[in-house]
Every structure is written in structure tokens, then in C-alpha cells.
Amino acid sequence: MKDSATLKAAVQRFWDTRPCGAKNTTAEPGTRAFYEEIEAHRYREEFHIPLVAEFGDHPGERMLEIGCGLGTDGRQFVRGGANYYSVKADFSVWPDLRNTLLAGYVGL
Ligand SMILES: C[S@@+](CC[C@H](N)C(=O)[O-])C[C@H]1O[C@@H](n2cnc3c(N)ncnc32)[C@H](O)[C@@H]1O
Image (tube, rainbow, N blue to C red; front, side, top):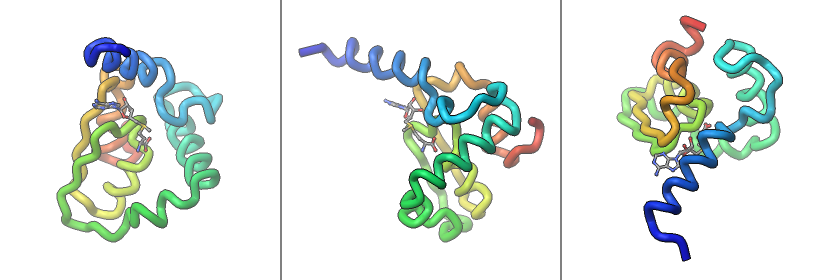
């Protein structure tokens, strides 16, 4: 059985090298196409997510997502008017993520 620190490091390594959805696009990381292709694939293949998350039904609510990945779901909450916050273990790998969350795709 791995100790807690070892397990956490392994989890972080996993997400550092496999950002959620990145395998579903061939676009250059950080470009608009990169995020759009990941988003299209995610909701085509995992169509239950918008049904469960009800992205547009939380305007003005404060929301915290622990582990936002590439911000795909987060952007939907932002577009729906939620006051969205997130933390993630591998933020430094994708420094442009903050822009995509704060302003949709502005800045890309
Ligand atoms: C399945 S992805 C999240 C998917 C996200 N909802 C999206 O739209 O792409 C899981 C995320 O959780 C993060 N994570 C895993 N363990 C964490 C921890 N202990 N603290 C913060 N973030 C963590 C990973 O870095 C990864 O970004």
C-alpha cells in the first residue's frame, strides 16, 4: 500500500501528463481550436454531463470545482453566469487556462 504523499504525487503526475480531454484533439495546446475540439468531443461522448451539471441553471451562484482539468466544464458554468472558482493540481502546466475560464475564449 502506497503512503499518502506517494499516492498524491502519482495522481499529480498522471494529470500532468494527461490533461483531461487533451488526447481528443490534435490541435496545438492552448489554441482556441484545442479547447473547442476537447469541448465538442466531451459533450458528444459524455452527453450526460450537461444534463447532470445543468450548466445554465446557476447564475449568480458561487461554485467551486476541485480539479477543473482544462476548464471545459468550468467554461460552461461561466457562460451560464455562475461565479466559478477552481483549484487543480496541475495548473502550472496550462498557464493560459486562467484566461479561458475568466473570459470564455477571449485572449486565445
Ligand atoms: C477528470 S479531471 C476534471 C475534469 C473537468 N471537470 C473538465 O471539465 O475537464 C480531474 C482533475 O482533478 C485534478 N485533481 C486531482 N486530484 C486533485 C487534488 N487533490 N487537488 C486538486 N486537483 C486535483 C486533476 O489535476 C485534474 O485536472
